[in-house]
Image (tube, rainbow, N blue to C red; front, side, top):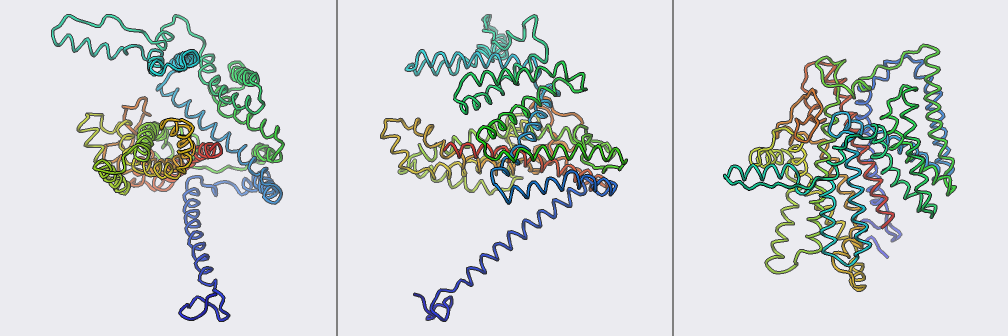
Length: 566
């Protein structure tokens, strides 16, 4: 028992005083609350500039408060007081359609800017399906032929998608042979299945190809979930057929309702089908069914409010952040300024960042934790590498911009300010963070699990793939989420690699000029027009935050899925 002798934290009765611990606890709580409140006030200030809610008539606010806000708050309060599963179901049934609509919009953007046509997507889908079929058949018929399987794994997708060798490679080789003065040429080339489909004299209608290349694969993945849940394989086939039929209806019903068939198919694929699977699971397990009423209340409140506002003639707000802002290009006139090219450019840049940083970072972490030697000269070299990786994580972002300028533009002669250069420069920036977070996640896997796997006769790679990575994946994805969140808002590297402040056209390829959201926001912040510096700038900031939150939310859902499986 502690006493006061030499211990000022003991009370007169000899009991340990909890005063200091309580003070520290409440000081931490106050600091966190102050930080969150400050951020909330800042976000509300920016959102008020972007949405301009006070430009509407007071009656407009009153109508939606009665029809939407009050019912939603009342229902949410009942979920908090009564049952937790209902609240989770309510959040999920609202969040899944939002994420699905954003995915549908992303695919629509890819198709509209010409980055990938419907025919090319259809051909790639057929080629990929054939390649996967060849791999599966070979694995079933020749399970012990490891070398043959390696050849099939590499050769089947290559022949299906690119051919042997690709046309561009044949042209380069023949050009080089001609410059050398030799008469030898490569006369034969295997045409890829993708090219064979594209060269067919007759292709299905556009909506048919879109259903076959988008709806069927997505519905197939969801159908696997349904089949596992019901333990009947035929239910997956039934779900795929139903989803494809519902999407195909848009080709006939959509024009009559004023809806583009492409929009109908994409919304049915990415929003309606996932919601149907989730709702079916909730109803089947009979847990949190009351939460399904929340999206109904939201939709009903919006529709009722719209009818009443139209009936009474209340003027709605005039926000800077509207559909015109999201679908238009930049203009010197504040009312006509748009954010469409930077949105497309940032999404394409993040694709490059993910493809470049994630595999390299996780692969480096696997080597450093599982394969790198511990002792000797090689072990000291590995230690030096890890120290440098830790130091690189704290290097200012402008330095990585200079590195991207020197490496990709000056040395590799890539186009200045292009999407590929911006993505690679940002990938270098977040690569140390991805490596360190992946190392910590792999290191956290108990060594006893590895030893148990080795004891059952598994090889090192089998242990890593089937034991270590599934358990480490939640931590790896957590670090990647933080890194991507930093990457999408970086401006200094984009300034260094020559990204343009304003681009009139959205990029149609990865070597086109890069319009990025943070770069455009930075340009607006220096504009002398007050409406641009306050209204248009705020709309761009809110858009950037929404994209960031959606990306992080999707990644968190994927991380939680791996965590549950682990």
